[in-house]
Length: 566
Ligand code: GLN
Image (cartoon, rainbow, N blue to C red; front, side):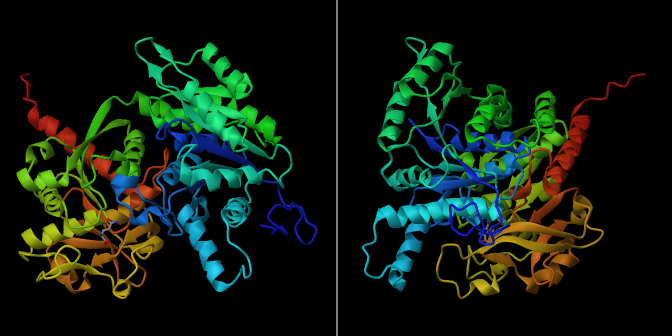
């Protein structure tokens, strides 16, 4: 990448031209949770399908530095980037839809921005000055937006502002994206507003008034959107489109109705058909290298829709009331099931309930079990019940991070008879701390961003299930944990049939454990779900689906009376 001499300059110091970056700023109106992140990710996909280099970025107005310290019930899943940032779950959609790794710069929070400005103030960088939202906070936001483009050499940076217009905490972000236009060439920035049209059942009509109000609010802050995406659960008529265009001062062809899709993977195809990409390209005067090619995406969606059989997987977790807490796990299951022409049905099991009344009857009906990541003591005993059930009944099991630790605790208690075996996270006084705090975590006192985070290499042991699934000997996977398998117990575990099939290159860290005498019982200390992509499922999830198909089909054979009379 050629460095530009200043943030907005198109000419590098040596006089060489750098590619001109265009910006699409996406705001939300009326209500949140209408799929703004998916819309942004889908637009990224359809622009990439034309050969453009796209970078995506999310601006989150909350004051936490990152969502890593929030409960999943507040925030949903924490998505971990390869470079170890704990980010919003929308970044997972960005990676899955655009099929590019995002990085730390793709996630900007008000907390990060304020922290940076205040640290500079303490160092004396602004000596003599009064530190203010405009220009200090807005400049820092703009610096990060520009960096998202220069770091990736993107043709287009799509910037999503979290929350909805009118939120007090979002104002500095809106002001920053307004200011971005100054210093850019005319038409190098495009503003897009995603709103919602409520449906009034009594009269059977969709209402545009909230959209009009939110656009009015946006305009009062100096931002006139060029595109309005009108989300709705019902079909949007031409009248409604024209009304929005008239009241919001947007061209009718730039009012894009987007009705709720059957699956999230339909959204790029719907947006492609809407003509929005051509409007964007025309507005931003982009040179497009090739006509859109969404054929692989279309084939994947077709395959998803054509699947006739269903695989049922139990997901035993602590936050199952909020499915967004397991977003990447859910999607990784969809990708793997689709690749095997299966539909996926997730049986959400609250681990605490399994602990209390032992819902084993539900486990008895599923084709596979996943114990995902998690923190804290609640629900642990229920997860151990699930792991025990999977081991004893030979149900395919995939443990993700905590799920691997749980699998080892269960094995220690019931196979090795280490009665009170546990993780030191849940019982510091256990006589068998088979999962222990990592050495380099012992001095850590701050809670934010201090776990073992991001991508690390892992060597696979030849001849193991893991090595067979991946088909290679070295992998890189993403992590988010403080605890690890306690190496003092490797030998007794190995003696009774656990294989440590993935190790850190120095062999000091167990990254994958599997039970040899079981069709598919495997756990990873990392989070494979972050690497799964539509059309390119993750080997551990594919392995689970394959084993689950085998388990389901074998059970059907047993359940069906043989009417082979001839
Ligand atoms: N709580 C466990 C640890 O910190 C597992 C973390 C996780 O599942 N992401 O090691």
